[in-house]
Image (cartoon, rainbow, N blue to C red; front, side, top):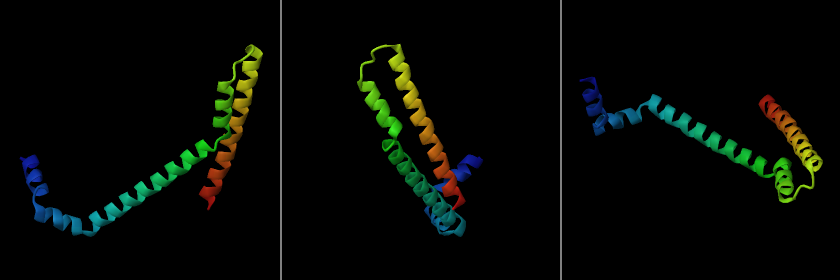
Length: 101
């Protein structure tokens, strides 16, 4: 019974228009649009950082080379790990600086 009542209210054009004109619904729509825009900007920034990432370039370079022995492989992995750790540290510092602003 309640579901039918709600369905009839939602399908009533006059009720929907009145709700759309109300301040709480408009404010909720503004907040939602703001959150979506901020998430898109953050995602774009993160993808740019990944594409500029030294670790990503290093992994691509190392993947293209044929390893000679096990020692060479471990050396490559150590270099990639060190680069990754340095990038995480710098990203952490940048993030904390942005939060402080």
